[in-house]
Length: 254
Image 1: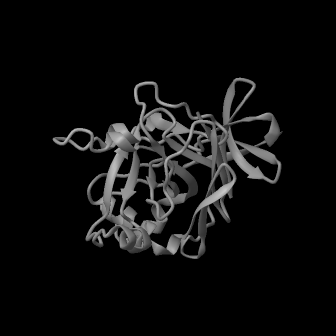
Image 2: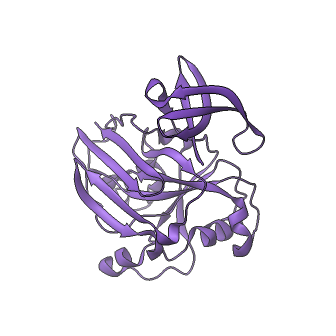
Image 3: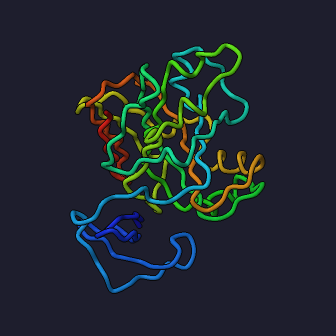
C-alpha cells in the first residue's frame, strides 16, 4: 500500500494512493486506520509529507562505493546525525535558498525508513516488525557550514534549514531494499544511480542498532545515507529522487 498525507480545500487528511485516486482513511495511519467512503483525484490535492516524525535521523558513510572512492574506513557501527523535523518538505513543495547562508547546497538522494511501531533495543530479526514502510528522500546539506568552525562540526545546522529533509511522495509498505535501485535526476540529468543493497548497514540493522541508543517511535524517519554522485545544486534546479517500487520525489530548489 502507498500511504500519503494531503491537504484538500484547507483540511488535512491521509489515505492510500491507488493510481490517480486517493482512497481516504480516518484514525491513525500507524494504528487503527479505517477506510471511509471518500475518494479524491490526486490532482486535486496538495501533497504533504507522508507522516509527521518526532525524529529525523540521517546516516553518514553507509555505502561501500562512496567509502571506497573517498578513502573512508568501513564503519563498525552506524554513524548518524539528527535533522530538525521542521526541515521536512513534501513532494512538489519548493525548497527555498537559505536566507542566512550563501554557500553551496548539495542534494543527496536516499532511501527513507519509516518506523511504524515503537522500537526499543530490538534485535535484527525483530526489526522488520517495527518498520511501517519506505519512502524517497533528499537529504540536503549546506556544505560550507559543516566544518566552518574548527572547534565544532555543525551537522545539525547544515542539515536542518527549512526544506532540507524532502520526503515522499508516499510510504510504500511492500518494498524490498535489497533488490532496488535509486536514481537522482538534477535538472533532468541523471547524477546518481546506485543499488540500495550496497549499504554497510541494512535498514533492519539500522533500526536494531539505533533502537539500542534511543527509542524509535511511529512516524520517525531514518535517511539511509547516500552513495556516489553528490554535487552542489544551482538555484532554480528541479531534483528528482526515483526509487522503482516507491515512486518519484520531485522538488524545485530556489
